[in-house]
Amino acid sequence: MRVMKRGNIAECYLDNIAVRLESIRLGKRQGYRRFLVFAELTKSKKGGQYIALFTYFSFQSWIRVLLCSGPRQAINALTLKSVYEVKLSSAGDGNVGEEILSFFEKIKELATQDTRQAVILSGMLFTLVVWIFSALFLLAAVLFYVFFLWHWIPRADGGLSGYCERKVNKSLTKIVHEKVDKALAKEERKQLKAGINGGAAALPSTPLATATLQHRQPLTPSITRFTFALDAPHEPVPGEYVTLDFAAELDHGWSHMRDDDPRSLNEDWIRSFTVSGSPSARAFEITARVKRGGATELLAKHLLRGGPLEVAVRGFAVTEGTRMGAVAEGGEKKEVFVAGGVGITPLLAQAPGLLEDGKAFEVIWGVRGEDVGVVRDAVERIPGLAARLRVHVTGKIGEADEETLAKIEALGVGVERRRMEKQDLERVFEGEKRKFYLCAAPALLTIMKGWLENEEVVWEDFGY
Image (cartoon, rainbow, N blue to C red; front, side):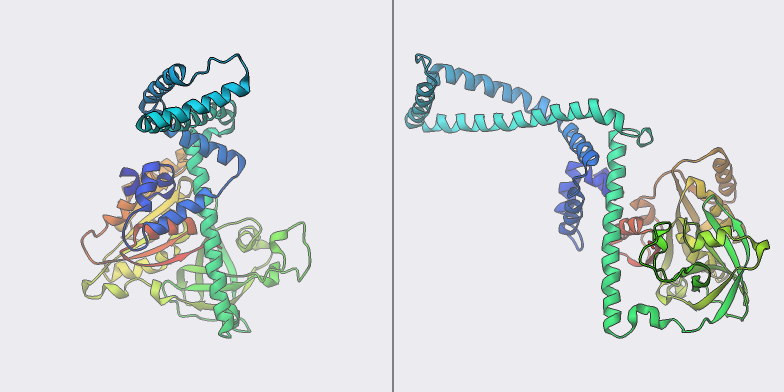
C-alpha cells in the first residue's frame, strides 16, 4: 500500500502485489487502463533489460519458492517416491519397453481401484513439477546475477532494483513520447482536414517584429536566460509565449541527406518559448535549457561582439486556459502550479502580478541538483515567491549546489531532497477547492495527471 500511495509507476510495476491491486482498482481511469500501462511496459524484450527484470522478479519469489513451497514439495516428492516403489515400480527383466507399458498399466489399475487416491497423487505430481520449474528459474536468476548482472549494472544505479527502476522509467518515457506524438499527429490531421494546415497557416506570412539578442545570463550549466530587444512595441501579457523564426541563421535549404547534422534535415526552425519576463514594451526574456544542435545552442554560443543576432518574431500568443488568477476571484478556488525543470517559466512572468493582487497560490517545483541556481535566481528576482514555493531536488548535489540550497532555504523556500510524490500535491490547500497547473516533460506530466485524476487540471508539456 505504501508503494501505491507514492503513485510511482515504476515502483508499482516492480512490486507484484501493487501491480495486481492497481490493475483491479475501481474508478474512472483506473484498473483496466493501469493494467494496459503495465502490459505495455512488459512488451520490452531487450537483452540486458529482460535478463535484469527476469532476475529481479525471480528474486522476489525466493521466500515463496524455498520457504513456503519447498518443504511441502519435499514431502510430496517423498510421498510420490514411496507410492512409486510400492505400487508402480516394475520388477521386469530390464526391458525398457515392457517396463514403460507395465508402469502405465499399473497407473490405470491404481485409478480403477481408488480414484480419489489417483486424483490426489496427480495433483501432488502437478504441483511438484510446477515447483521444480520455479526452482530452476530461481537458480537461473542467481547464475545470471553472479556471472552477468553483477558486472553489468552501473554503480550509479546502486544495485539491481535501481537499475530495473531506471530502465522501467526509460521505457515509460518512450511510451509516453510515442503516445504524445500520436495524439499530436491526430490533432494535426484534424486541423488539416479543417483547412488550418497544421497551425502553420495561423502564423503571419511576414514577421511582426525583429528581436535582437541583447544579453544572456547562464543560471545553471544548462539553463540560460536570454534578453531580446524588439524593434516595435508590444503590450506584454503575463503567461504568453513568443514564436521565433531562426531560419535566416540556421536553415541550409532542402536536401535529401545531411550526414554531418541529420537532426537539422529540412527543418523549418520555428520555435516557441514561454516569455519568462517583460522588462518593457520593447523587450522580453526567455529562460530555456540549451540543447546541442538547436536554436538554443545558437543563442548560447553567438558572440555578441561579433555582430547582433537578429531573429524574426512570428507572433505572441497566450493560452487563456493556463493563465493563473482568473479562477481565484472571490476566493472560490486556490491555485497550485507544479513544474519540472524549466517548466517553471509560465509562472515567472505571472507571479509578480499574482503576489501584488494577493492571489492564493502555491508552487511545487522539481529540479535537478545542478539546476538549483535557477531557483535562487527566481526567488531573488520575485519578492514574496519564496514563501509560496516548495522545491524538490533530485540527482547529484555538489558542494556549490548545497551552498545555493542553504541560501534559498534562508530566504524561506521549503526544500526537499527527494522526488516529488503524490502526497506532496494532495496536501496543498487540502480540503479546499483548488485548481492545478502542470508544466513538465511528458513522462513526469503523465505521472502527475495520474495523481490528480479527480482534480481540476490544466497542463502544458515541453516534450519537443
